[in-house]
Length: 368
Image (cartoon, rainbow, N blue to C red):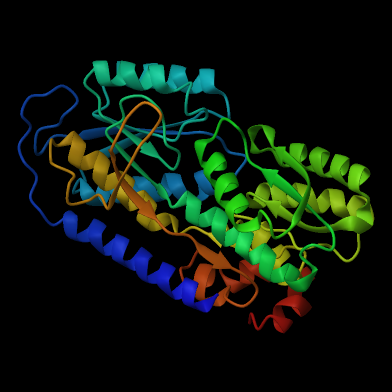
């Protein structure tokens, strides 16, 4: 586990260094192509995020991207922001509005990766480059940045297996995957299966509509009823919001002790559940390098610069081959490394994590 953490941390540092070094080159003057900004002009970047059920988008992604756009644009960048609140039709209307506002570039984290394809084409037809952020949008996108989603599912699956130990096949596993409209959820699911298949008995599996915790609660309640509360050995949860809903259902059913439950996103509530032992782990995704990559890609495209020196991979979407991409690895966060992940990176303070209710658990976890 520590070896993996070391590799992931080194890769994140390398990615962040790549972003910084690529920014050192001078900007070319605009060649007059629509959507591009001449050197010295204000750059307007449209930022469309998918929802606010998950804490990360409003708390981390938006302010980080705004900060990095200012940095890479040398203070010329202006971010025009909208959140679709999980509605694909609203997000399509937001793209139309950004086209009317004549933004230079769009950064889009799609609610529905397929449904957004037509809107991406409209933006491209209007001369506006599109950077897909966090989720791989379909349509003629120019660049993509996200985390290594296959790696994340593998981290989750292996952590669950390690927690189960020689009891891996003594009970049933419930798999609580994300929304079918999210291509990332599909990748998490595939890679988690690659780690778990043949090693555990999967009693029930669900795709959770809209990533909503209340839907995870309903699904978990049904799983408990079908399998029996004493026969659930562990739960694969695709993210922390779902983990919260799952744990609520387990508690309501009187399941004790709680089985190991995975997560993702390092939400504050999840970190607190890890401290108390209610949640096994989460995947910490350092948002700074992802946001920096999105901002640098967007500014470079707005100024007509090449992005070859920024990318570290190419990926294929169902509609577009060899999309220039920056992929960032995730890091397993558990009770042992809270200090060296979210606290060290100043995502949370000890005071934010260790409320009065958690005082004893925090002392036991050496969080002071």
